[in-house]
Length: 241
View 1: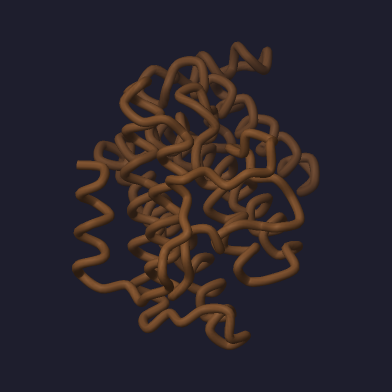
View 2: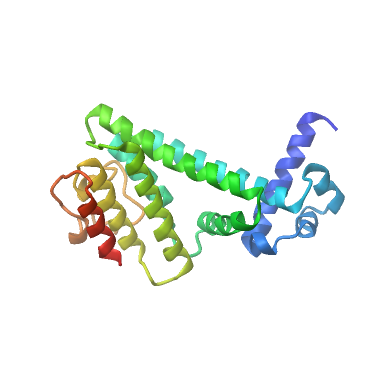
């Protein structure tokens, strides 16, 4: 089988696996389900992937990397580092409890506890997400837009809060509204960059959570610019506790 044909078939299998995972979850997905979706034999799937665990891990990596590339491309096209940061946050925040991307990410974290093939991929992708935020924060420092004392630590906190709130938001409908999610992320991003929450936005486009009336809501700011301190962060988390 030619190399390009093998790669094409492999991608088809990964795409079909993602479709099945969306319907059944990682734990409920069988090789037979993927084979049936493609109209092929189980043996063809096993020709490309030695085990179900390997197939699921590869499918998650395939899906997640495309997702990250799309978000990075959108962020890179922003005119300022403030806008880049906002676009990253906006892209990471789930659209709703039925957000397919987050359904897969959350399910993958659970699968990583059971599947040794999934664990290193999940960890690498999480580290890549942190690195994307860190790169933007460092660029903002260099341009003079941010005053972020510890970009790596700040990136870890931003990514961690998104992950934690995303589980609450996606898994427990009604516990947290998207508007509140955005507000909390603006508060943390502001504390980490020395800006006010109202500054954390992309002035050239409306955020997904925007009501469309062009007016700032009271809970979005303004707030005096400050550096992130332990007190700031405790106050932020207390708002949601």
